[in-house]
Length: 178
Image 1 (tube, rainbow, N blue to C red):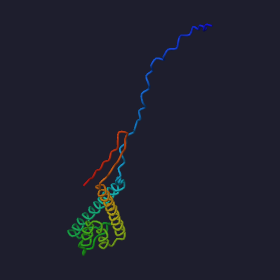
Image 2: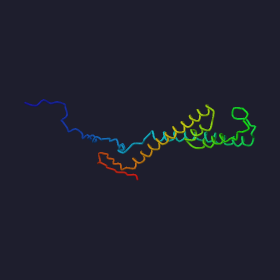
Image 3: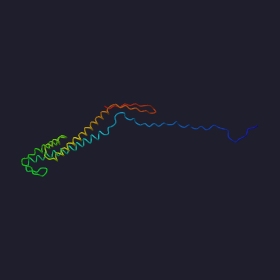
Image 4: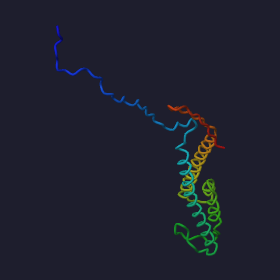
C-alpha cells in the first residue's frame, strides 16, 4: 500500500517572531506632602486688614485732632470768632476745651474716649465713641492676625521628615528651618 499523495507542503518551522517588550510600569512621581504645619491662610489677611483699618481710622482722627488744635489757636487770637456750628463764641472762651480735645484725639485708641470729656455736643461724643471703637476693633484684628502669623512661623521652623517610595527605591528626607 502506498501513501496517498497530497499537494500540501511539508510542515516547516514558523518564522521567528520578536517577543513583545516587557511592560513598562509608569510611576507617577509626585512630591511627598509635607508632614509639618500647613500655611495658615487666615493669618495674613487678618493682619493686613487690621493694620490698614487701624492706620486709616487713626490717620483721619489725628487729622481731626490737628485741625481742632489749629481752631483752638484761632479762637485764642480772635475772641469774636464763630464755632463749628456757626454760633458766635463768647468773649470769655479761650479755646482750652477745643485744644484739649484735639490733643486727646492724637492719642491712638484711647484718645477718642478721652476727647469725649472735652465736648458738650452729643453728636461729637457719639462719633468719638464710634471712632474709638473702630480703632480698638481694628487694632484687635491686627493683634490676633500677628499672633496667628507668629505662631505659624514658629511652627514652620520645626523639623519636617518626608518619605516617598518609587520602583527604584525609597527616599527619606529631613528638613529643618531655624
